Image (cartoon, rainbow, N blue to C red):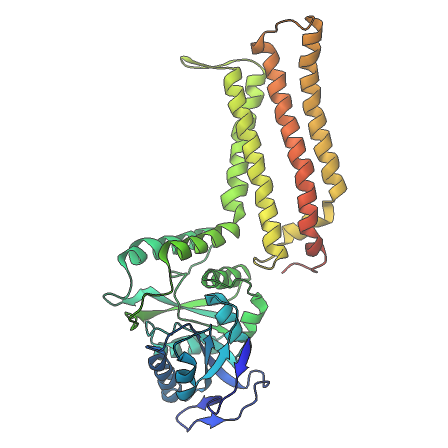
Length: 415
């Protein structure tokens, strides 16, 4: 990231003329920083900057306008400087990379972010700024409680994509936000710095809400209007690709609901059926469940256990990489769990399985290694094979947990 100095580098104070010459090193030297990610927005950038200036002038804000340029080739940088904005060049491509770079360079106590395509009116940001002044950490715009003008959003986004993704976000993270992916939002810089944002793509929008929610920050929402963007070219957003990236990110940060609990459910169902069928056939009306059903029950247990162990690994990875927030249970678990204890547990479980398999092998020995009755011998073999699979999985995942947990142990107390 580089900050390009020009005669237009400045902060804007209310209705007064432009002031130039403030140093970039003055932390929080203005109240508000308007940050706009930009990639070839020559058609609309001037209009966005003008709207931000109107907000500044009308409300007499001590503010600056930052264009976080992501490698524009259409002269957007020159337009921004001519209009009195500060240009911050972000070499790493991506929506999140541009915003992270712009936020880091910002000198404002409050950060207002919005797209540079004129789909949002920056004059509406004053409502967000007032909420931040009132103590909110993050203020989201909501297009669904506000207004979506005709042609501003494709029907698939309005009625399918955005509502479904927002619903999933509310369920997984117990958030009350109605519009997870609104591009106009504001956050206190101190709150932003505490979140430790990591994503560089479109997932940034989800990460901001998820982390703020998990960190128990005060999040508020105001209705805003979405306008049709004024660009003649197609948007950078790709519906399926970016929608999947948002969904994938949320699922990764919530393995409790996507892996752990479903896996635990499969283990309980499969385990109960496995134990029952080990005792003998089960009559269910006209159907009889026997050794074939026992194989399926074993499959449920093994698949379920894999989901549980992978879910725990995903959670450890997210915390270790500071993508998701920590939790007390995980810190406590690492005080108890060690690689050696995990390996011993895996060996012990596998040994139980080998005992069951050995009992079947002994029957075979007693029969002179001749034919056996599968309805009898397959029961201990199936149960034993299940225990062996669980033991091996425990043994291997102990190495994985240990590797992922190295950084976690040294990261201090949980949030």
